[in-house]
Image (cartoon, rainbow, N blue to C red; front, side, top):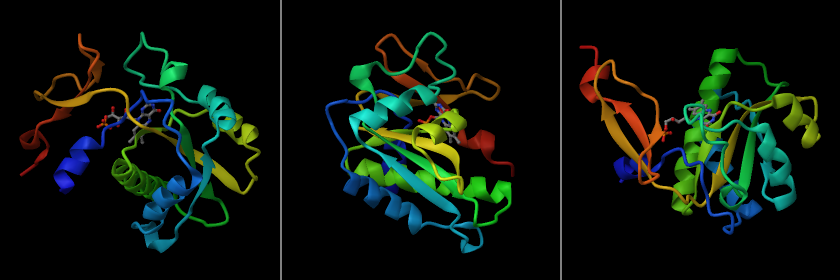
Length: 192
Ligand SMILES: Cc1cc2nc3c(=O)[nH]c(=O)nc-3n(C[C@H](O)[C@H](O)[C@H](O)COP(=O)(O)O)c2cc1C
Protein backbone atom coordinates (compact mmCIF):
# COMPACT_ATOMS: atom_id res chain seq x y z
CA UNK A 1 0.00 0.00 0.00
CA UNK A 2 1.34 3.40 -0.97
CA UNK A 3 0.06 4.98 2.28
CA UNK A 4 1.98 2.52 4.43
CA UNK A 5 5.07 2.87 2.27
CA UNK A 6 5.04 6.66 2.58
CA UNK A 7 4.42 6.47 6.33
CA UNK A 8 7.31 4.08 6.77
CA UNK A 9 9.59 6.24 4.64
CA UNK A 10 10.89 8.47 7.40
CA UNK A 11 14.23 10.25 7.58
CA UNK A 12 16.40 7.75 9.46
CA UNK A 13 19.66 8.89 10.99
CA UNK A 14 20.75 5.86 13.05
CA UNK A 15 21.54 2.57 11.35
CA UNK A 16 22.85 -0.94 11.85
CA UNK A 17 26.47 -0.51 10.77
CA UNK A 18 26.77 -4.29 10.30
CA UNK A 19 24.31 -4.31 7.39
CA UNK A 20 26.43 -3.60 4.35
CA UNK A 21 24.91 -2.42 1.07
CA UNK A 22 26.17 -3.76 -2.24
CA UNK A 23 26.81 -1.61 -5.26
CA UNK A 24 24.19 -3.56 -7.19
CA UNK A 25 21.48 -2.55 -4.67
CA UNK A 26 22.46 1.11 -5.00
CA UNK A 27 22.24 0.82 -8.77
CA UNK A 28 18.73 -0.60 -8.43
CA UNK A 29 17.72 2.36 -6.27
CA UNK A 30 19.13 4.84 -8.77
CA UNK A 31 17.23 3.07 -11.52
CA UNK A 32 13.99 4.15 -9.80
CA UNK A 33 15.17 7.76 -9.95
CA UNK A 34 16.11 7.30 -13.60
CA UNK A 35 12.52 6.26 -14.41
CA UNK A 36 10.93 9.18 -12.52
CA UNK A 37 9.60 12.53 -13.72
CA UNK A 38 12.15 15.14 -14.81
CA UNK A 39 11.75 18.76 -15.90
CA UNK A 40 11.34 18.78 -19.71
CA UNK A 41 12.72 15.23 -19.44
CA UNK A 42 16.19 16.79 -19.26
CA UNK A 43 17.47 14.22 -16.71
CA UNK A 44 20.20 16.50 -15.37
CA UNK A 45 21.26 14.32 -12.42
CA UNK A 46 24.20 11.94 -12.04
CA UNK A 47 25.16 9.86 -9.02
CA UNK A 48 28.31 8.99 -7.11
CA UNK A 49 28.05 5.76 -5.10
CA UNK A 50 29.88 5.14 -1.82
CA UNK A 51 29.54 1.75 -0.12
CA UNK A 52 32.98 0.78 1.18
CA UNK A 53 33.92 1.37 4.83
CA UNK A 54 36.90 3.41 3.71
CA UNK A 55 34.98 5.83 1.48
CA UNK A 56 32.01 6.01 3.88
CA UNK A 57 34.34 7.09 6.68
CA UNK A 58 35.77 9.84 4.52
CA UNK A 59 32.35 11.14 3.47
CA UNK A 60 30.76 11.15 6.94
CA UNK A 61 32.53 14.32 8.23
CA UNK A 62 31.21 16.35 5.28
CA UNK A 63 27.60 15.95 6.48
CA UNK A 64 25.50 17.83 9.07
CA UNK A 65 22.84 15.86 10.91
CA UNK A 66 19.52 16.85 12.47
CA UNK A 67 19.83 20.60 12.99
CA UNK A 68 17.01 20.64 15.58
CA UNK A 69 18.74 18.05 17.79
CA UNK A 70 21.28 20.50 19.09
CA UNK A 71 22.68 18.17 21.77
CA UNK A 72 23.25 15.26 19.37
CA UNK A 73 26.47 15.07 17.35
CA UNK A 74 25.16 12.66 14.73
CA UNK A 75 25.27 8.86 14.55
CA UNK A 76 27.97 7.05 16.55
CA UNK A 77 30.37 4.83 14.54
CA UNK A 78 28.24 1.73 15.30
CA UNK A 79 25.11 3.41 13.92
CA UNK A 80 26.43 5.17 10.82
CA UNK A 81 25.06 4.77 7.29
CA UNK A 82 26.62 1.99 5.23
CA UNK A 83 26.19 3.75 1.90
CA UNK A 84 25.88 7.24 0.49
CA UNK A 85 24.62 8.51 -2.83
CA UNK A 86 25.84 11.92 -3.91
CA UNK A 87 23.34 13.50 -6.30
CA UNK A 88 25.09 15.82 -8.73
CA UNK A 89 24.10 18.18 -11.47
CA UNK A 90 25.67 17.18 -14.76
CA UNK A 91 26.51 20.76 -15.74
CA UNK A 92 26.58 19.86 -19.41
CA UNK A 93 22.78 19.65 -19.16
CA UNK A 94 21.47 23.22 -18.77
CA UNK A 95 18.46 23.65 -16.47
CA UNK A 96 17.06 26.47 -14.33
CA UNK A 97 17.97 26.13 -10.68
CA UNK A 98 14.41 25.84 -9.36
CA UNK A 99 13.66 23.02 -11.78
CA UNK A 100 16.92 21.28 -10.98
CA UNK A 101 15.92 21.18 -7.31
CA UNK A 102 12.50 19.85 -8.21
CA UNK A 103 14.24 16.97 -10.00
CA UNK A 104 16.40 16.40 -6.93
CA UNK A 105 13.31 16.07 -4.74
CA UNK A 106 11.57 13.63 -7.04
CA UNK A 107 14.69 11.50 -7.55
CA UNK A 108 15.41 11.44 -3.81
CA UNK A 109 11.89 10.34 -2.96
CA UNK A 110 12.00 7.56 -5.57
CA UNK A 111 15.31 6.32 -4.16
CA UNK A 112 14.12 6.40 -0.56
CA UNK A 113 10.82 4.66 -1.32
CA UNK A 114 12.64 1.94 -3.26
CA UNK A 115 15.10 1.56 -0.37
CA UNK A 116 12.23 0.55 1.93
CA UNK A 117 11.61 -2.51 -0.27
CA UNK A 118 15.16 -3.65 0.56
CA UNK A 119 14.64 -3.14 4.29
CA UNK A 120 16.74 0.00 4.04
CA UNK A 121 16.04 3.60 4.90
CA UNK A 122 17.85 6.87 4.71
CA UNK A 123 18.02 10.60 4.98
CA UNK A 124 18.39 13.36 2.44
CA UNK A 125 21.23 15.62 3.54
CA UNK A 126 21.46 19.04 1.97
CA UNK A 127 23.89 20.36 4.60
CA UNK A 128 26.93 19.00 2.82
CA UNK A 129 30.39 20.52 2.59
CA UNK A 130 30.26 20.39 -1.18
CA UNK A 131 33.81 21.52 -1.86
CA UNK A 132 35.22 18.98 0.55
CA UNK A 133 33.18 16.05 -0.71
CA UNK A 134 34.10 16.88 -4.32
CA UNK A 135 37.76 16.84 -3.30
CA UNK A 136 37.48 13.58 -1.36
CA UNK A 137 35.90 11.66 -4.20
CA UNK A 138 37.89 13.44 -6.93
CA UNK A 139 34.64 14.47 -8.60
CA UNK A 140 35.17 15.54 -12.23
CA UNK A 141 34.58 19.30 -12.64
CA UNK A 142 31.58 18.64 -14.87
CA UNK A 143 29.54 17.33 -11.89
CA UNK A 144 28.24 19.72 -9.20
CA UNK A 145 27.28 18.23 -5.82
CA UNK A 146 23.69 18.88 -4.71
CA UNK A 147 22.63 16.55 -1.87
CA UNK A 148 23.73 13.32 -0.25
CA UNK A 149 21.32 10.49 0.51
CA UNK A 150 22.62 8.51 3.49
CA UNK A 151 21.43 4.89 3.50
CA UNK A 152 21.44 1.89 5.80
CA UNK A 153 19.25 -0.50 7.74
CA UNK A 154 17.37 1.74 10.18
CA UNK A 155 18.15 1.15 13.85
CA UNK A 156 15.89 3.76 15.40
CA UNK A 157 12.16 4.23 15.92
CA UNK A 158 10.65 7.20 14.12
CA UNK A 159 7.03 8.22 14.69
CA UNK A 160 4.80 10.89 13.26
CA UNK A 161 2.61 13.15 15.33
CA UNK A 162 0.19 15.95 14.37
CA UNK A 163 0.95 19.52 15.25
CA UNK A 164 -1.68 22.14 16.05
CA UNK A 165 -1.76 25.18 13.76
CA UNK A 166 1.02 27.51 14.89
CA UNK A 167 2.69 24.76 16.97
CA UNK A 168 6.33 23.70 16.67
CA UNK A 169 7.30 21.58 13.68
CA UNK A 170 10.70 20.78 15.19
CA UNK A 171 11.39 17.08 15.44
CA UNK A 172 12.66 15.78 18.78
CA UNK A 173 13.46 12.57 20.67
CA UNK A 174 11.12 11.48 23.46
CA UNK A 175 12.04 9.74 26.73
CA UNK A 176 12.14 6.35 24.93
CA UNK A 177 14.64 7.75 22.41
CA UNK A 178 11.95 7.60 19.71
CA UNK A 179 12.42 10.27 17.07
CA UNK A 180 9.14 12.22 16.79
CA UNK A 181 8.28 14.15 13.65
CA UNK A 182 5.39 16.65 13.90
CA UNK A 183 3.35 17.00 10.72
CA UNK A 184 0.81 19.73 10.08
CA UNK A 185 -2.83 18.61 10.06
CA UNK A 186 -4.53 17.94 6.75
CA UNK A 187 -7.19 20.59 7.45
CA UNK A 188 -4.45 23.15 8.07
CA UNK A 189 -2.82 22.74 4.67
CA UNK A 190 -5.96 22.71 2.53
CA UNK A 191 -6.71 26.25 1.42
CA UNK A 192 -10.28 25.88 0.20
C1 LIG B 1 15.75 18.87 0.74
C2 LIG B 1 15.97 18.26 2.11
C3 LIG B 1 17.15 18.50 2.77
C4 LIG B 1 17.40 17.90 4.01
N1 LIG B 1 18.62 18.11 4.62
C5 LIG B 1 18.87 17.50 5.79
C6 LIG B 1 20.15 17.67 6.41
O1 LIG B 1 21.02 18.36 5.91
N2 LIG B 1 20.38 17.00 7.58
C7 LIG B 1 19.43 16.20 8.15
O2 LIG B 1 19.70 15.59 9.20
N3 LIG B 1 18.19 16.04 7.59
C8 LIG B 1 17.89 16.66 6.43
N4 LIG B 1 16.68 16.50 5.83
C9 LIG B 1 15.65 15.63 6.47
C10 LIG B 1 14.52 16.48 7.10
O3 LIG B 1 14.99 17.01 8.30
C11 LIG B 1 13.30 15.57 7.31
O4 LIG B 1 12.74 15.27 6.07
C12 LIG B 1 12.25 16.24 8.21
O5 LIG B 1 12.73 16.37 9.52
C13 LIG B 1 10.94 15.46 8.25
O6 LIG B 1 11.16 14.12 8.67
P1 LIG B 1 10.63 12.94 7.76
O7 LIG B 1 11.49 12.91 6.53
O8 LIG B 1 10.77 11.70 8.58
O9 LIG B 1 9.21 13.25 7.40
C14 LIG B 1 16.41 17.08 4.61
C15 LIG B 1 15.21 16.85 3.92
C16 LIG B 1 14.98 17.41 2.68
C17 LIG B 1 13.69 17.14 1.97
